[in-house]
Length: 362
Image 1 (tube, one colour):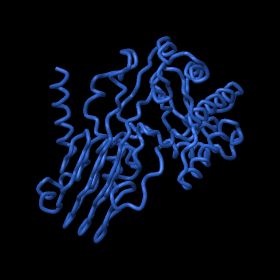
Image 2 (image 1 turned 30 degrees about the vertical axis):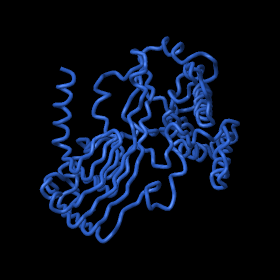
Image 3 (image 1 turned 135 degrees about the vertical axis):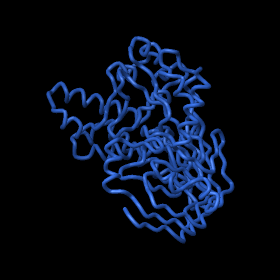
């Protein structure tokens, strides 16, 4: 893209924020359920009882929600009161996001050597943002710990995290939902297909990223506490800093500008950027064998943060703190648990993080 102008527009409010038309109806689990149902169509398992039950739970949720009725037990996990607040619960929310080609689900300013080569051949230049209002972006980011076994994440078919720590009762025994049962069933069907000699390409077409190890499937069928079955496994841990789809958590960002050059800013106003997310309470409660591999996984969590302007990937040459101070009016930033930044230069931020880690772990 070249010679792009964004002007005379208002971004916000986001769903659930003051002045918006409605709240966010449900957590990411609803999106995951709908996606699994959609992906199952035409693959031979769309009529499997577990998939049918998942489909019914979505239909019942939709009916009860639209009619203002109390949710059925089978649908409660779509609005689990321990995490739901009528706000987006994903990894990030943006007012304006300008970024290199591809999804911006990784960390700030993440780029491979191949990406840099492509940008060198086809630079993204000439971006003007003027007379823009960005207001009332509300997020309650949800950090979802992801179980890792032998270096592989435990997932459903579309990269959906199997939220193991939220599928336990007080004794650590499996507490099923329609979503987790569908994820488990797809893992079973994938295993059956593997034994029948189905090719890798065909397995991926039918079951995507589904990966639930046998021992975990057994826990999801039985009555043993999780710690009893997990203690018998090697190379087992939980990964932090991601949302329900493993996207790196980044919080609320008014403008994220990365890998673009020739940027001009003029008369931009930002207000009411709020993040009500909190870091997962689970890591300190896990037994030593299941905790994230390094204490570094506990620090520098960005999912609770608020950034008015965040730049990186070379954009910091054009968009400096001096430019932002002159061109952007900022007020009303709030984070319940994280850090609030008016301006972040990702290059300098990474140095600050490295210095912070040295101080913490020396």
